Image (cartoon, rainbow, N blue to C red; front, side, top):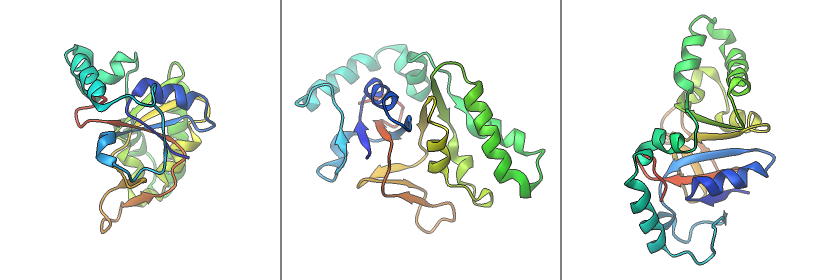
Length: 192
């Protein structure tokens, strides 16, 4: 079952108690989703109103830590891993026919080598490359069993579906049943 929140701290606490400790940070706000959410909303207070959330955002956005995705991760004490950069440099030396296997091993090494129990991943688009023949969500889930992975998802969450790309594009992916924590953040990276 998908857990949906707009607070990264709540997302981390929820993910720590799950088998797959994956948090997908996706642009958006809860009010945009309306009544279409057959997921479990996790909130500190059931009746927290939208005005309080906006006041909190306004207060927090005035701090230097709240400037985008990197600022949000810095506030948590995490340096995001630029996955695309690390993997693409490593894969240049690998024959194309072996890249699918090698990318999974390299990703596992990156996760194991990261300090602490929280790992922030950015630029995960490399997993969607058609020639690698990967299932991006499955790889992220598999590697989130021992550490909490906070992944900046390069797509959208709409109508209880996790989507990457456009339907006509060869890298298009749509996941209807997502067993993960989804944390909605605004376009700049700050939470609502």
